[in-house]
Amino acid sequence: MTTSGAKVVRSGNAYVGRQGLTYLHGLTGDTVGSRGICMVVATLPPGARAAAHLHRAVETAVYVMEGEAATFFGDSLEHVAVARAGEYVYIPPDLPHLVVNRADFTCRALVAHSAADDQAGIVLMPELDGLV
Image (cartoon, rainbow, N blue to C red; front, side, top):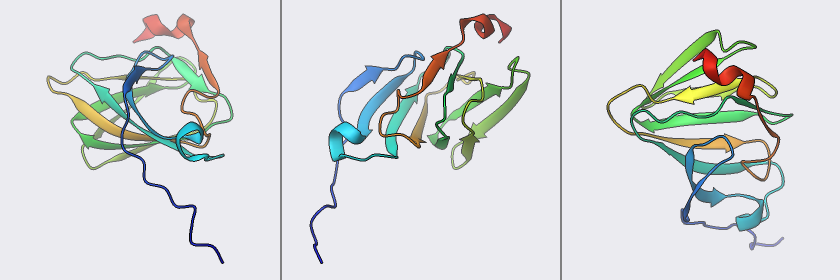
């Protein structure tokens, strides 16, 4: 039995994802060699808004650490789920969605995907951006 393999990763540099939100590098295939999970921290200042998108064959789980964010979802972004600090959001694979911080304070959230890279499977849906 081996005792090696566990890894500690410190949050890395900020980057802007394809969907337009700012993230801190975290646990990914690149940083720890994971194959089916990644975790990053998203920071949404007041007014921040993602581009409409979906994650092809990738599940998304979000834990809001501080602030709140509204996730619009559905084929026409007709539904909304508002999550506040201490709450979770689950987004199944292939579900169109768009996240907005409509509050006057920053939202920070831990975001996990069932892929080794948080940008894997993203399909931008610009035809939905004007609906919200």
